[in-house]
Length: 60
Image (cartoon, rainbow, N blue to C red; front, side, top):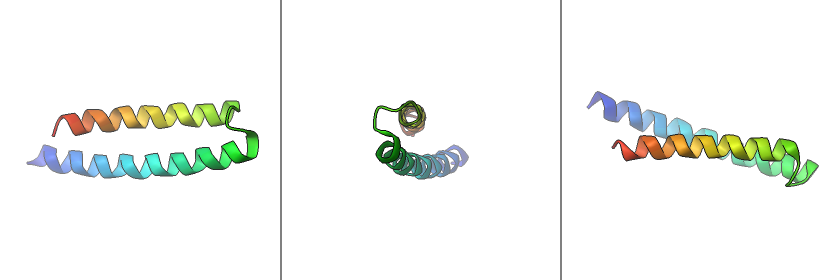
């Protein structure tokens, strides 16, 4: 039961971070170009968050 609450809270936090990262990536992409180094770094960070989200989701 405790693990479920932790995973649920973690999942919500990851979703918030992913959405914020997407918004930032679009903003930076519009300013610097969608293939700029900064845009790609943010994209890679979002990928890491998505991988974490998948792991948390698998354990439920």
